[in-house]
Amino acid sequence: MPIKNIYCVGRNYILHAKELNNPVPESPFLFTKPTHALVESQGQTIVMPQERGSIHYEVELVIHIGEKYEPGKEADELIDKIAIGIDFTLRDVQGELKKKGLPWLLAKGFPNAAVLSSWLPFEGLESIARYDFALEKNGEEVQRGNIKDMLFDIPTLIEFCGKNLGLAEGDIIFTGTPAGVGPISKGDHFILKWKDEKVGDFFIGS
Ligand code: ZN
Image 1 (cartoon, rainbow, N blue to C red):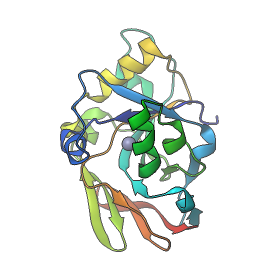
Image 2: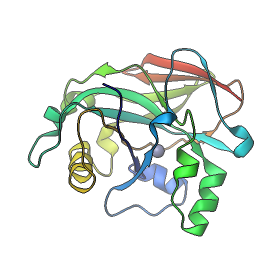
Image 3: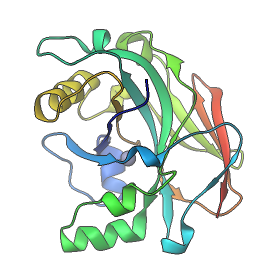
Image 4: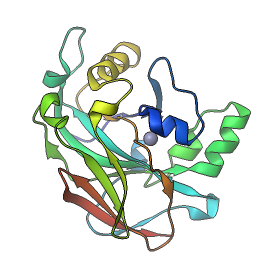
């Protein structure tokens, strides 16, 4: 089944909210991306619209929903697989939109703005919390995260999306980025890691 909705959570790790001088939110803060933004990393070159300004990487744990949300259903029942993803962001464009109080769609929704590793088996939230996800850029680790450090945990995010927006089979949620986001350049090589193993990689093209 193709992916339906792409929900993304902003400012879900305190250290990341602070590195961009953003206030820490009091309830989950969400935005979406069009499905045209999706691309699976398989060692290829992925084109980024760098002519539109600075682009930042944000590595995130991504959950895939396998059945329709109903109040009371547990996150462990609803999630059927996970991936490591990058929420690519046109940071200058986002800054302009923020100043004007406009939605972030143009900064977050461009083609290839949602890069995914291959899908990985979901072994339960307790198990996920025992491992880190990480991002390497040109051989150097630039981000490392663990769901234990989330401001709003995965059950809270699922309930929030389910109640306010609807959540069903084929929907995915980018659950927020830890600290360490930064800019990309043409030719950069990124490696997505889960349990300290490579689960996807790609190069930046323009
Ligand atoms: Zn993000």
